[in-house]
Length: 174
Image (cartoon, rainbow, N blue to C red; front, side):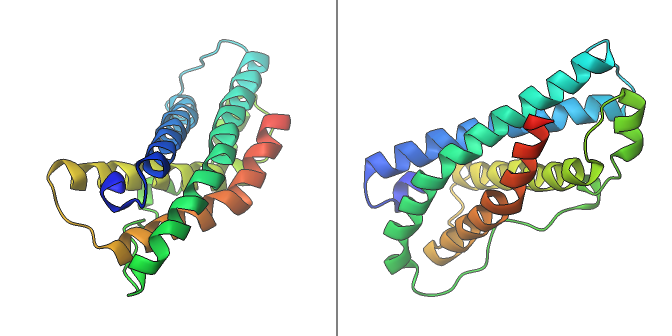
């Protein structure tokens, strides 16, 4: 679907590759936290858990940093075709994404800002859900109009490449 609306194949390839990297690293970050929320103490020591969170935050921070350029280029190329304002397919957070991570982090022995973790988890979980929805729409060949595609990608850029990126940088440095 992204390739179909891209001005050039190269722009689409770069964006798709970076979105895949973002999805994979976002899933790893979220799944790490979800395992701790279920009480799985993996890795086995608090120091290793702290390091695992740092690595997961660093991976997604790197992937998101690499997304800025191809996403901005794609939006720039798509903008004239998206003159009519569309509705974003980039959904709002659901109840499952809203969680107080402080007790989970305390139990895991990980000393980082629970607020930064909660905000990052929320945005990354919504990203994963949005990308899965976009992929599903492409698989079943459900059309997404150019205005809606542009609006969703614009929302993605605004939500992830600002505060979320800053939060992930702080978590990676913790």
